[in-house]
Length: 252
Image (cartoon, rainbow, N blue to C red; front, side, top):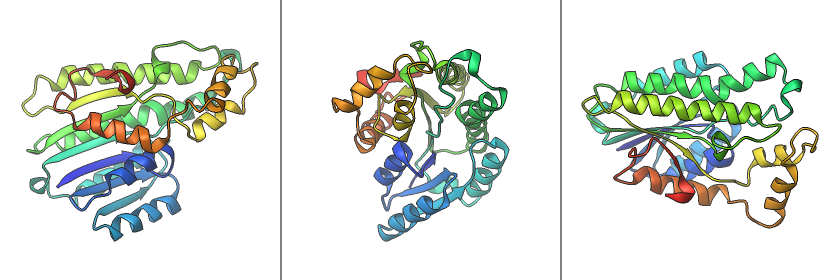
């Protein structure tokens, strides 16, 4: 059995990843704020003979997310797993504005989702699966914005860059261990999701690159969540997964 843990599983790329992973030989643990979409995914999985555990939790509260995942993992028999993967997919794009308009509460709320939660869940994953014989992998969903500065996108660029650097550090730690986890922070490309819709609702006063992102949508250059999910899962299954701790799925 392969065990997959997916955050932000209720919509967008997270939902596409979850649907692509529904298989009788897989067991899924899915975390998201919205209960109804998770329940729908569980019913879909059940119909195909796949066990899916929905955890309705706000990733903005890392403590609750850690508690929920800890409880879910106690129901897993480690000896039944050949591979266990954590996919830190959940993320927010807001606030999108010039730095002089950033508000402390907005910054803190976003940092908790984009950085605190994946760091805390990765720490928990590494701790609880340390004695498992299964292959262990962590896939952090990053962004090209981690490597390119945009006026009006300082929050998102900064949190994704921090996630990449966290991944590099963990990779160094794990490579020294017996059966250390392999971890990668990967940029998935520009995807046609609610996040892109939120960006297109902004003004050039808040986000100077707005015309470029509008053009991507109008010219059909946004990838579908399903297509990106398929590409990411192929990347996750590669024998050399982890060779580069930070990568871009479009160039791999």
